[in-house]
Image 1 (cartoon, one colour):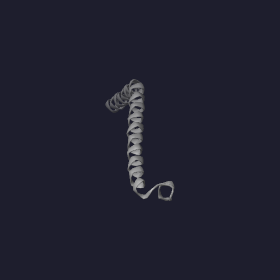
Image 2: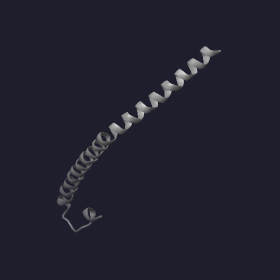
Image 3: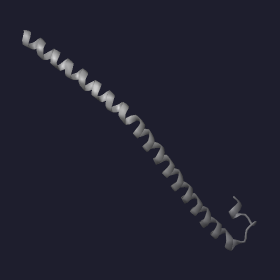
Image 4: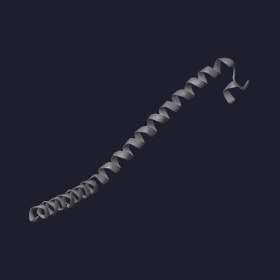
Length: 75
């Protein structure tokens, strides 16, 4: 690893390690923010499709329940 070699004076290695840690934290924050934006966009895009599917499933379940109920009444 470059920071542990004798290429840098010993005093500077801790400074560089700290700075690299800060840079990594900044990158993580940026990536997390970008990922959240992507997920939010996908949720907004798929929400209407999901609602439509749920409504169709509810309608099918209701129709089956009515059919079962009417079949029981005929007995």
